[in-house]
Length: 456
Image (cartoon, rainbow, N blue to C red; front, side, top):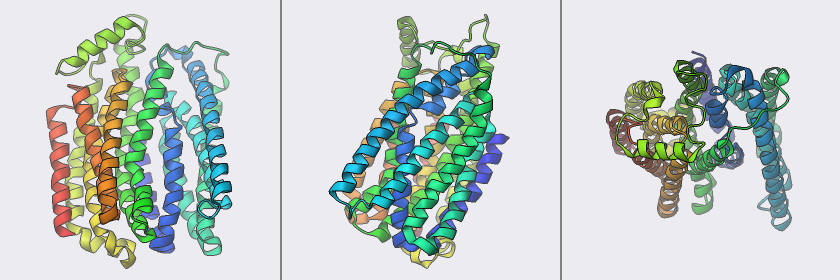
């Protein structure tokens, strides 16, 4: 219920972000603002080092008396890596400003860096609470952050233009960090002084992070690709609008699956025989990895020690598709009239770009399902390999389509990445998705794309 309420609130704020901000900024300035927001989002996710899934998978699997200490140890270890990454990013940004200040204005670059650092710190704190079962603040983060961002942009833009609007991104990240500090502080205050990190946990995190970064590039890179390859701020704004709406629904689905994972892990461990949790680290030993490969080589319901966890994820994906397929089909039929009516007539040219973005939403339940299934099976390499396939598909389509199709090419590249990720995941995690869920998702996406392109 908490995740559903959080997603409902997030959708409300995303509607405001998608409707009000583009109207106020106009296509050109919205395109410039979206590039800054996209850079902050992609970079912060790339620096997450698989943190949310790491916390959600490992902390609930530890004995109850060790969870707070383990969460603190993992957070401290991740913080060191993130600090080093931020230092490198700051160095590169400083060099870009020095070499080409017209392309990389010092004020905008500084605001992007500050926003990135604040966003990374907020995620660190909130994912710690997620691992300890505090799903409320995790679910509330983006509704709160989006609401602050919308208000800040609407208030600041008339006074300082795009630079002031970008400052609103930093302000929203300050609020998110405050929420994270209020969540993590009490959770960790009584933790034991030290605890040994689970073997394999950091490898899991690194592979998850690499896969997550590539997924973000495929999801959000369309905006940057249009900015670079189409050379039009208006087309960039159209791509940002269509992808923003599509990704709002995509991440709403993903968040529900992420919030569900800690409870599934804890429940499976509670039902396991013996005192040692069943799902802690099956992969820690060579024998465990061998058993995992053998189990996953067979096409079946998944590893038997996972119990009902994967079945619960499949049911969740089925429910999501039952809502998303008819909703996106209706949206596809209404695109031509709805886009200019909702976002303003300046965005009438974005109608065609919405077609691939809507189809991408229907693929979201499968990609959310396989991400959590890979975490349950402790198969982060499957996540990485799927993300590589998705990123390659995105890059190929972007290079071929964006120069001639502009915003539509950018959203088509994002759709190609999502589909390639899903198909590769289905191949690498046999039994995790199920024929009905996978077939309904891909067929639904094809139907939505066909109808939307016909209407557009």
